[in-house]
Image (cartoon, rainbow, N blue to C red; front, side):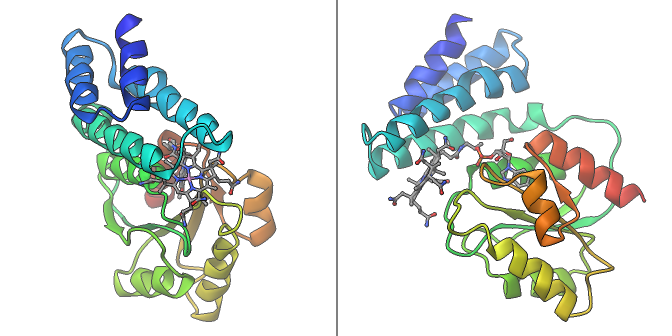
Length: 211
Ligand code: B1M
């Protein structure tokens, strides 16, 4: 669809007002929110990522593209969070220590809230100590860790270890995700679940809270 290509193109240019207007236009035209996300916004961000890798664009351009992405997602939020089964439970979420990427984490948060969970967002650059302290303080059912960098993902192992050391490992479910994370990595650090995307993360969360 032409409009989805336009959304992708304007996102790559970091033109947030245009992205917002087109996302709204696409919604008004009856295109499903998940299609706008998956075939418009995400491919745009992925192209920016490839260019970033190849040194064709640099941090400032990536940042303005990320801002456009976040603003587009904000318009989609009420449409992405489906009505229906609502879980009761509390999740603590954050991007691990040393890592400032928050777009994926914000998507996961949005989907969890959409399923009725109460979500405590610790933001970015969150240490294992902070994850576990917040889980204890809020009597959380889930700790959700996001990582986008291979250099920082090992903080997830520290979260599992800290939860064990502080005696809450059997009370809290630890879910991990983010581009470099795999099921194998999840198993190797002793976390409970790996989710490849925000929708699967919310499906897992709802299952955990129903148990
Ligand atoms: Co950075 N960056 N970045 N970056 N950046 C990547 C991740 C990179 C792959 C780019 C590349 O080289 N191709 C690369 C990492 C390489 C690696 O480690 N293997 C990289 C690098 C190297 C860096 C810097 C080191 C660059 C530098 O300064 N030299 C630096 C690090 C800063 C830091 O964090 N300390 C850096 C900085 C930045 C910006 C600040 C400019 C910006 C972030 C802005 C922001 O987030 N507010 C940025 C961006 C935007 C990217 C790319 C282009 C896009 C990431 C993104 O938002 N994707 C990225 C390249 C790429 O991914 N193609 C790149 C869209 C988002 C929806 O996807 O986060 O994967 P994602 O989330 C998905 C799933 O992974 C999953 O759900 C989402 C989809 O539904 N998911 C979970 C995520 N968390 C989950 C948690 C769950 C479950 C599922 O359960 C708890």
